[in-house]
Length: 409
Image (cartoon, rainbow, N blue to C red):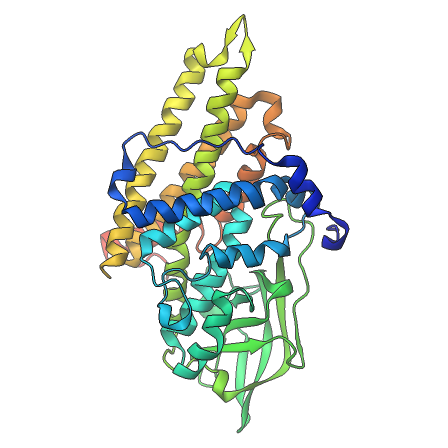
């Protein structure tokens, strides 16, 4: 059972751990020269906030399996909620590379923190912007951008994960409203979300999106406990028992599976950047540890096998940086395909997970303790490699793109 957030003095823990985040960035191919001055300024601002406000408490949050709710305001202030959406709705009005950079800085600290922001921006705000009415955009987006409202995304079901089209959650037209029944699971932000963007089938079997608000009778969000991964993120279920959803809460501008899959593309793009942050944190820690830890009268950085691990780590990080940057330019131009996004998500998550595992070995026994971020990143990435499309599903998306043959059916 997770600890109660009210029993943890995060402010005291923050004071005790100030300055312990020793992360230094690594840019072997001078990728920074591909970014604008604004990109770098925003990255530095987010990195500074993370080091001051989140890094000092992240281990306590993970060990206690408690999401630190007090950081929501800060996430909003650094522009983590929908930075790529138009400023006319109170959002950042920035480009996709900025969005990626922010996700990278958040996940450098912890995947659970990035997940909280990614769900809010890509899976709640984005579908409202993309498929919602003007009234819905004006009603929800400014408050979501400010963190006044928090949201979640209801697609995955107990029996339908990689096959979302098989969902059984459904709505029935009751004249003045829709009656919603069903259940979703593995939903980030669910336990505290004010709204949920939910996907359900209508009476014709067509998938529709709708906005469900907390407080609607028959709507509950039980929390998922006992997680070994994403322990700083709140995960839960969405239960719908004869929930009356007003017709004005239907997303009017999309029908079918295209709706949720478009949202997932946006989230997967953010992940492809975010996991680079986790990999960089593991590499930075491993490099520093190898230079400080001595065996046989010299730093272990001087041994060939340790140099092999570190050289391979920075090589893979550099390749992932360039892949993410190129994808970001395609996103800005509106030219990125789902298959290209799948390639980046799949490659970069696997890269980060492999680096976490190698970094754990560099740290030896210390790598399993909370004194270093390695094991926490590793456990988190075991979830990231599965959610928003499993590792194998992304392989089949690529396979279909390059062969023209559909292996899903």
